[in-house]
Amino acid sequence: MKDTVFQQLLKPITKKLINECVQKFNSDYDCESFDTRTHLITMIYAQIHQLNSLRTLEAGINGQKIGLKCKISRSTVSDANRRRNANCFYWLLEKLLSYFPKKKSRLIRKIIKVLDSTPIILKGRGFDEWAKAYANDQWQGIKLHAEYDLGLSSVTRVLTSHANINDCSIGQRWPIYRDIIYIFDRGYVDFNWWWEIHQKKAFFVTRFRKKTSIVIESQKEALSKTILADETFKFKNKTPRGGKKNLYSESLRRVHVFREGKNPLILVTNLHDLPAETIARLYKDRWAIELFFKWIKQNLRIKKFLGRSESAVKIQLATALIAYVLIQLYKILNKDERKLYLILIWIRCNPNINFRNRNRRLALSTNNRPTSVRRL
Image: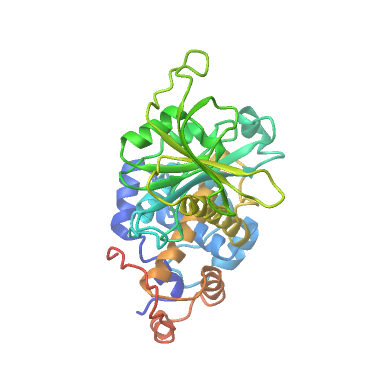
């Protein structure tokens, strides 16, 4: 039997992958027919169709040709969202993200990653019971941390934390790889973490705090209308915060960028060979991760939740990101040149169309074709 478009979308989630997940997390313990695979497909269906309640999910999914072996009831989904370990879905997400190819940026022939986070605000009955304990001064909920690859135009790693965990603490847990450029904002200011990045032969570009004590080694002023100054410096204080030692002992670079109607943007980097204009452009391209956060909040279901327990919220976040990754892989493997949201809308409106008929009508692009990914 030929696959439908929705079934083709699920192709990367192989039986072998699901079995490995079940064995690792024992995620099918004490369940009857609503196993991990069925749970995952159900939640992906809810994400693709932006269903905002268990009642609409139950009405919409039953009878669809999407490979389910049992009838779905809202009470079963609710129980599974509350009881099943959310970590199994984040493990599946990490495996799917590993299918993406490595792709260098066109601006400079290096892999460029952007690190940032976005809040998922959770307030009200059901959320307050567990989220209030981890709230910060401004909001309560879960923070979604992401690594975004500018060459791929896609997220490549994801973590979640409570609201009171700062970005820098998560950054210190992030894997750093040689010869990759990491771009992040002022939330990731930790000189010793910067030194760790430098020691691993990787690079970074970030915002600089004005009150930091430094010693200027060299300076070039008014290089262009955009670049106001380009300096090299070293940190002055070796113990800047209550006796904590600053390990960063080598020279860094500080670039002052003009912004109309605002104070100059001051950037710091360990990239000494690139033009100052390129450093400014790299940081400007950091905005791509903000667009990613905006995309998933507008096109997937991560603002309204099908359950209010911590496990239910984390499962819905994980399956939203899995749906995003599956659409990206569908786009890459089928060389589909359309924008991602148009592919999502097409899948949403035509889940049961035969895939081969669709494949014959694909408009293939001859330019900018993505590198082939590992065969799934």
